[in-house]
Image (cartoon, rainbow, N blue to C red; front, side, top):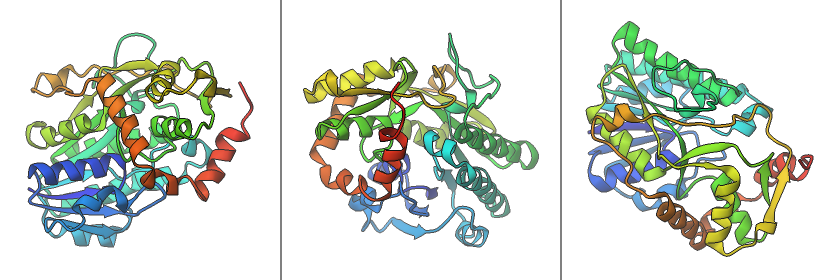
Length: 336
C-alpha cells in the first residue's frame, strides 16, 4: 500500500509509521509534518534510511504542497496532523482551528481531487464531552467542551461530510487517551514520569478524580492498520483500551513503578472546563475482530521503563519554550 501519513513525526503518527514499515503494511510511505514543537524526527531515527520511507517538511494547510503530494496517487491518507494539547488550546485556540479544521479541509479536497482510495481521519473521544455513567457509542451526539475537542469535532464532521456529499471513502476513528514511547512530555504520563525521575513535583489537577481510559499506543496503531482494510466507508469507530482510571490512581501507579514517594504529588488548581470522565463503547470495532492486546499493568511499566532508559530523547525537549510553558501552566498556577 502506498500511504501518505500526515503528522507522522508526532507521538501516535511516528508509532504508526514504525509499525507499518516493520510489518510491511506500507510499500511506500510519505510522512508530511510541519515539525511544530511536538514533532520530532528523533522519533523516526530507526526508519530514516528505509528506502520505502520519505519525509516531507510542510503544513497540511498549504494547499499547493498537499495537492502536489496527493498527485502521487496514494492508496490512502492517514491524517494524524493536529494541535492536540487541551491546555494550550485554552490559552490560544487559533492554531487549533487552522490546523485541525482548515488543514483537514485542505487534505480532504486534495483526496477528492486526486481520487485517494481511503482517507482515515484520526479523531478523539474528547469530541463526545464528559459522561457520568455508561459509555459513549459512535451514534451519540458530540458535545465538545474545550477548544481542542471542538476543533477535532469540526474536522471529524467535515470528514464525514466528504463521504456523505462526494462519496470520498472516509473512515473516522475516535480513540481514548494514548500512552507509550515518544510522547511529548507535556502530556500527563510522560510529564509525571520524567518529573518523578528527577524528583520534581507532579502537578495534579484538582481532586485528581477525573477519569480517563488508557490505550497503549501500539494497540491504537494496530486498530488504524486494521481499519485501513476492514473499515466501512463513512463509518466512525471508537478505539478504547478498557483501562479507566482516576488521574490520582494513575499518578500513584507511576510513582510505584519508579519507587518514588507519594509526597511528590502536588495539587494545583483545576483546568478550566475539565471533563470529569471519558468512556467508550468499542463493541462496533470489536465485532469486526479487533481487540487491544496490551494489558495495562505491563504496558504502563514498559512505558515508564522506556522513559527511564531514554533520557537522551526527552531531556532536550524539557528546555526553552517548554520551560516557559511549564512555568505558566503549573509553577505560577494557584495551588488547589
